[in-house]
Amino acid sequence: MPYQWKLAPEDLFAERYRQMVSSGLPAEDVDTVRSAVADMWLDQPGGWVYEWSRLAAGYARHHRHQRAALAYGWAKFPALTDDARRTALERQLEQYVLAVPGFKVGFERRMVQVLGEHGGTVVPVHLLTPPGWSGDAPILLASGGVDTWKMDFHGLFEEVALRTGMGVLTFDIPGTGECAGPMDSEDGADMVRALAADARALGNGRVLHLGISMGGHFSACSGLAGDVDAAVVIGGPVEAAFARGRTFAHGMDGIVGNALGFDHEPTHAELAQSWPSFALRPLLDLDVNVPMLVMNGAEDVHVPQHDTLVFEGRRDTEVHLLPDTGHCAVSKLPQVLQLMFEWMERHKASPR
Image 1 (cartoon, rainbow, N blue to C red):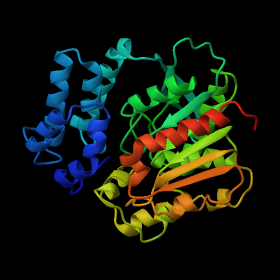
Image 2: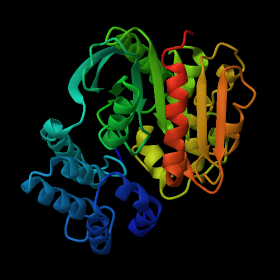
Image 3: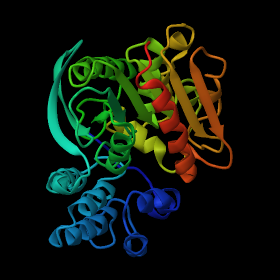
């Protein structure tokens, strides 16, 4: 069962405000919620999920379904720790589907059967396709991290489909969103491998992988192992982030602990027991990687610079550690996107 932990809403607003507004919510509406929220966990006036859900319901009444989906996305943040947040995720999906006619891309919700060591699981995925899609272009697998999931990143993934002409297959990483089970590096890598195999039949057979934040851990896995044809890693933890004794800022300990499947707030020692299986040193020591683009902000408080710079000097790998910006270089998103789109243009059609 999930758990709640001590978390100050004002800290989350300070860290995530830019992300909230850049995703498509009006600043004045975010400011209204910010002024009203006084507690992270109460489902009543002044509570995080209550105030965000009230904003979302207002959007829904006025048929602003995409904004409603975004607001419900923040209502269920930062983890599905209670019934109110699970309800917010259900309503986010409802509003997201209602918003489909307004999308600039084609949309299909698919259920992919993924077989693993402990049996099979069904992974809900969303396929976004650019206008005129005929299946003759590559497919880009795309995922966010432990607290920002496939529907939350719709605007970015839609832009990628429009700018590149690729189909974008979006999914939630294990332990998050609609993906059942705790977060596990090996299971996640197996899931990506299975999704890549499914994706090859949807496009021209070529598959790229974009991972953001913890999703970048899994795109690093797939790129280093050669499970896809090219990989983009934005703010992905790969090695130093999992060192023993590491702590996280802005409530990330609780977010990660919930994704890992803990039913109580874990001690640093308990968290540390999970880290060795996530460190990608065995893959970093190989030389089988596909072309990779690795980026992050130099001031990231969650992922050490090492986890970006460790890729420098690798074959077929381009690395950018951007100064004066933090996790995933969010404050320099236009520069990140420009670098990414230029790189994708060079690699989406090139042979392995």
